[in-house]
Image (cartoon, rainbow, N blue to C red; front, side, top):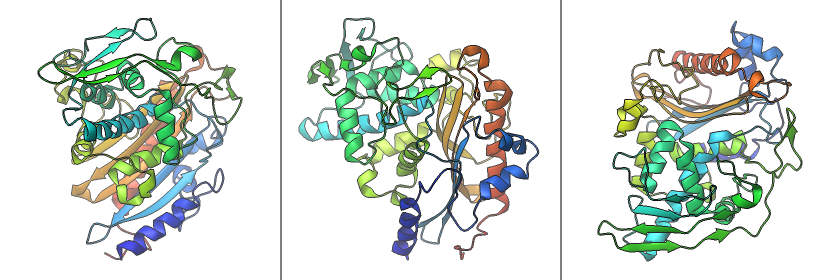
Length: 403
């Protein structure tokens, strides 16, 4: 029975990119009708193309043995329609960092995500790093950087993982897994294209202060660019910018939370401890963590800082009892994106929801045209509310489901 369910999903997955505006599953145009029936979301339908809205929703059902049955729907999903992924690219770097450390540990058992690190750079783009001001102990560690990204989407933490992995390793491993359309070729810092090809020497030390790993300065000899070619959106050229489609980001997230639903070749080699860390910190609020720096600045690092879908990044929004939202967000150049795994065991609700919206519309991408508060957060909040309400009301009411 498990094999039947998984084969069914794989067939749906194989035809995922059937075209913009189309939907999979037994209910064609489900998301369109869901939005059309809502007074708020129906307004966005009229401007969906101008706002570059893309949505991917997967309802997850489980049989008595826990085997997942996935019912997937899309709205305007198009991997050829570029959007600035912003902080979404932190997720593949986190997964690759964990995988790389597991590989290194086979050669050097003392290597750990908790090792103290040094980055021996010598330029503004590649600075020397011997301290982490956000960490509880102020010590640079990969585990701290990963948590800082998951809790607060910290950009400096992303830059450190970028330096640890290097462009060549990132794209070699992603290509091997079939994610050849992904590009992570820019730090979140004022670095040139040439500077982003280089990464500084990195050293790791054990608890006794002994050097356990040394990585020399690296340079990617391959000149990488956007696989879509010359891309200009809102007057900005994204031809040498990061690129991550909503489809690929969704699958990388699904590979952690519902791994059996993703082909094994496209998963990441994570340990159980890695998976536990991801499951804990993707849903944790900054103030509930061990990072005192987040509690001291609770007004900025509020509980819904990274919760766009359903809570609209509103610190006053009321939490739904029992619900955990495991997610990653992106926010830059007027674009908002959120890719999330929702689970509420008390209410038997489980689903994946991914969405992106360009709040500048067809206007020039400038700060003056960013409309995060006016249309971005309200859209993602309402979308999350409607999808959650649907899943809550329609528990296990599905033609494939026999409870």
